[in-house]
Amino acid sequence: MHEFIELESRYSAHNYHPLPVVLTRGKGVWLWDVDGKRYLDMMSAYSAVSFGHSHPVLVAALTRQAEQLAVTSRAFHTDRLGPFLQTLCEMTGMDRALPMNTGAEAVETALKAARKWGYKVKGIADNRAEIIVCHGNFAGRTTTIVGFSSEPQYRDGFGPFAPGFVAVPFGDAAALEAAITPRTAAFLVEPVQGEGGIIVPPAGYLAACREICTRHNVLLICDEVQTGLGRTGRLLACEHEAVKPDGLVLGKALGGGLLPVSAFLAREEVMRVFKPGDHGSTFGGNPLAAAVGLAALRLLQEERLSEHAHETGARLIAGLRAIRHPAIREVRGKGLLIGMELDPAWMSARAFCEALMRKGILSKETHDTVVRFAPPLIISEAELDEALVVIRATFEELLPAAEARRRTGESFFV
Ligand SMILES: *Cc1c(COP(=O)(O)O)cnc(C)c1O
Image (tube, rainbow, N blue to C red; front, side):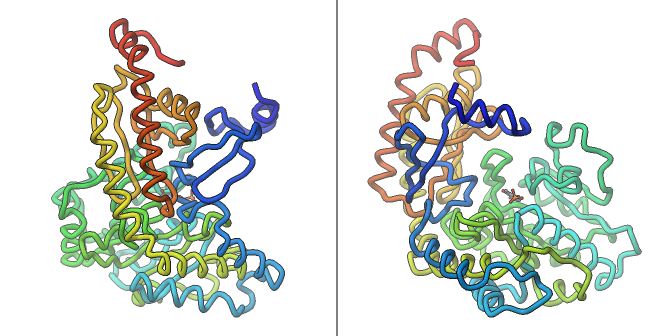
């Protein structure tokens, strides 16, 4: 075993199960391990590295700002926060933004805003507000958030959980409407479920949810931490159905792959519920984060990365669907957020990712059966075609072992 893996394994909490690769350098869509081997990054740090590794424009914004002013707390104003939030609001069509650091914090901010709006604006009785979520959701790892997860492992041993959440099946607008009561403050939904397995809901689902939420005076809050900022081929995934949410959660790519930067954005009527002292974060909206976030948003526009993700994503999906292999159950996704569902009788997603790694592509399974393909949005068509050749070759190479496994039911690559 590599000394660095041993060291990590000795001193870190075992809350992850990484692939056995030790990375030391990244540039664009490429990563290098400590032995100098090069890999194509098809994972992008769960979409945080949409601009590729160490994008020169973003690194320049980071280093320039680091030398100027990095962290002040929100006890004072800075000349960086306003321009960042202005661009963020103008691009997304939202009225106001509340900057945080991680996705989970921005989701927590959305939950607090929704509840307070429920009491102060909608008139729900104190402490009675409910928020509707979806089965298979992923919104982070805080105790409140895992409390409304439907994934047993995310919850096991971490209770008691906060009340006030109701779960409905994802993709079923009628179920949402049936779950709404006079106590419902908001519906929190991912336009495409990422960690849930790259689940794309039926066409028209989000638009139907919008209509239902409007009719019942319920806030529609889209968690676009993973799907936002070009990933699905539009700036926001909810734009595929021309939906404008009341609240929007962004994160991951907002930090340009360099820093944790997140935000909760909302309509005026919602954001107005926050008064000084109601909510905050020591690092949220710091000048370093604001400078990098602004540079990332500009880059997204200037390089037309949403359009590029739309085009290259269609090419990648078509290329993956053209691979004929009995282990492939389904290829699904939007833009460059693509999942390939494998039949576990043939091979586990983990085994496939390890085989891909040996051939120079890094990806990661989500659940036991889905391989995620979510490269940086800057990936070129030539690089994608190269990746497709390697993916196809990996399936061919694994065919005899997979066939043997299926015949005998024995474990494969464990
Ligand atoms: C990753 C993710 C989060 C949580 O973000 P962190 O930065 O890991 O806290 C929230 N929502 C969605 C949809 C995500 O994919």
